[in-house]
Length: 383
Ligand SMILES: *Cc1c(COP(=O)(O)O)cnc(C)c1O
Image 1: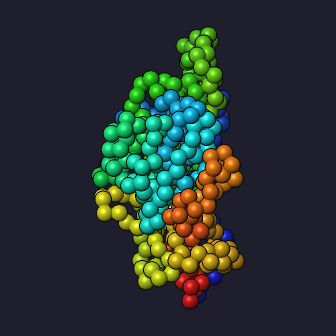
Image 2: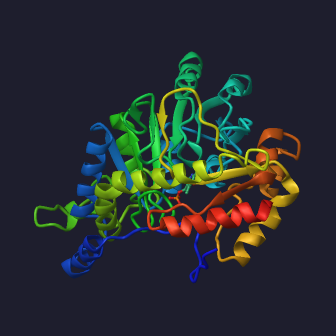
Image 3: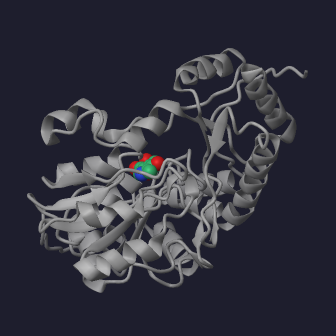
């Protein structure tokens, strides 16, 4: 068996020379904050997302929170989401004084179980926040039908879903509101960053205020030649505007993301083929029977025997392979237990998966030789 000399992380970004040159140009330009490149990035993102409105933020977390505020979520409201997510999905709900109402997942797809959403709705429910876990789109038709019947908003946490599509339509080109992440671990990056995609003009304006002190005109306009330096403050906003340094990275990544995703999907397919005979040891993410394209963001496996999970993690680490147990169920974090009364046993499918899941290395620059090494080590562990 081949040996490996460098640590193979769970993920790492691929940054082209053009991207690096562009960042250097920004640094030399004299304008580093939100400016022409951020505007250009938003325009390009808008083209990518069917000409819908796009607002960039310093992170998807900031975008999710601003989106919840823009649709009017307030203390006492309830927002439905999945406990199998990165904690920020629920944190942003809690930070607004609203209650994250978790709905259990499907243990085969690891996505929220759309058939359990309706039963979780109450008079206080205002929105549903599904997560396209690992890049596999949730069953949006069912979710949007529930939202329509009950007059709820939908904010898709699409942090994993840049380039995913559902029934022939790219995530972000249709529906209510989508939030994408450009954190370096995601399918495309801007260093840190994220964006909100939406249609409503007033909500779009609110996002613009929220990310910049509640000031009613852009800072670039104020400093540029044509600018007028007076401004009004109409709400108490945050400071979560994207910088032109980030936008410079994001612009190039956006032009490369389809090719990068093709590479990810190719590697994911190789894992699937290599593990086709391992079904008694672990499950791979189920493939729903609706038409979809997976972004290839993560490659999770769910061990049949939960006692082996941490042993496999250590075994991989000893062998220079990074793997992560994504995610620890959110409802079991102490804050969520104390504040909202969640406890072990509330979401058995999520807890089952949470005890058994491991994500294997998957990134554009993972060579097939390196991937074969990961495959061999995973197989070795079970033999
Ligand atoms: C990464 C991630 C986020 C947050 O993205 P940031 O840009 O880091 O704020 C939100 N939701 C999910 C599911 C994520 O994986």
